[in-house]
Length: 517
Image 1 (cartoon, rainbow, N blue to C red):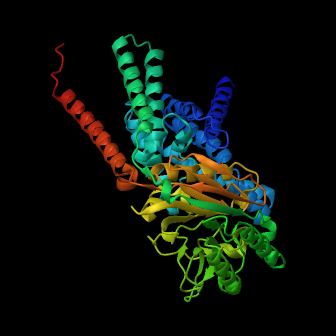
Image 2: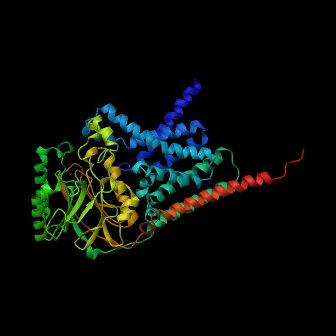
């Protein structure tokens, strides 16, 4: 009985410490909790043995991911038509799948009897990489994002969010190693002092990396933006009876800001009609903008000549609008089940949960050109794409002046999802050293500088236009040039040295003379 109670207690503690890790992210911003949560995971992965370590690590993941992606049930239940129990069941299944990755981390720790604080982050980063790539990837809730508000944010332009994630696990591992050493009665002051010194020096270097400057502002080229937030209710957005009301909302917002901003930005699929149906309206808007010396960026749903439906951004500049001859970016990384349905011949007949509005998109071509307005290049990303750092980096160019992302987070209501999404967009600006323009349907629309700091923010769930000036930058951050290659090289080196050291130790034990009886 006592053993059963202890197991239940340990399981609840594992769930709890996974759950509190989510409070390190936006909108809570308690970034030190990232270290606390990982400290607990390291405890479960090392102090427990065999299957217990895997079970508790899995439960840590369930606490972390179930709360962390809980916002998904809103789109499944409210807009997918699924019963509440089914929406939460699907969230639980996704959390269970994502929890396999911390479980894999615990397995590797157990399998190779890892004790070095340098190897824990190497293994963790590899499992996080796998989570971000397997089955098209879902790199949501990487703990590096929590550090954009910490003193260590300066690591992002050097190594990207994966480098920050590596640092969080490394610092947690050093603290855990010290705790375990003293708990086991370690008496060597030199051992403890050396690790404390290592942690202090590395933390100071990470802190002072924020003082490094890799890009240069060009205030003489600053543009004024108007981000139009229509606040169209999601349940009405795709209703044919409501379409022209949406057109009227955005037309009024455009007219109020035309001539007052260099670039007017509308959110993802702002008008829920196929683009060619809007041709007369788009021509009119382009002509009005040109006369007032403004340019327009807006999200559209476009049916191309091959009959493929694309989620696009178009630029209405000085050239008259024509569907097949307009600067365009089409979304490359689509949302599974939201924009396309895997195995759709089997899944679509099962019900509305697999038939969300506009869930039949095709992906755009890879590595598309920047959009050019007012002589400045914009590297675009639509909604979900902004969470993939290497994909955003692939569309970044040395001549890119701004990052641009259009989104519609109305799918997730008043949940924590849109705030987490915004935080990831901020990280892209910090990594690449470029200011970011983010326009959304109902919030959170923002202007972000090259350090990932929000300069202006529109209130959520409000029909408004956010108008402000944003200064472009020039120059390259190390991450923009090299991506994650230096981090992967470091991980390979650490794993190589660790495995070589283990082999040498075994060889020396075999060669050691047998003690005489």
